Image (cartoon, rainbow, N blue to C red; front, side, top):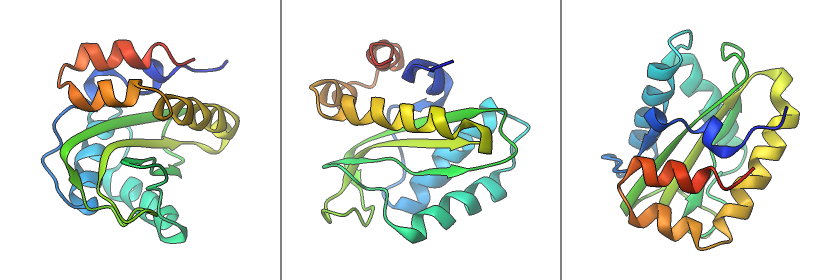
Length: 151
């Protein structure tokens, strides 16, 4: 079953106003949102998985956008959190610029096929005006509706 972005990024895991200004603070906020939606998960081990992946290469991949992702065995399939920062997060991105949208993904071993599909959908989204619409609004329902267009 192929998932659409609105299935991965539930309304309760969309944070339209990240408080953090550093990568570490943003990761804590986003992991907290995923753990709140998926209580079977452990914050510490999820963060460790994400940092392990991040050490290999920054996931700040597109201008203003980062997609931190990791294999995390305690999640049922695949889960995500989306954080928006209008001021920008210092992310150590490949282009050295602040990041304004962070699409965090965690998935179990069996979700790798879905994971590639989700990354492709996010890539498509960030190359349209949808990313600007997401960054400009702090209305979670509006963001969720935009995400639902990417399947």
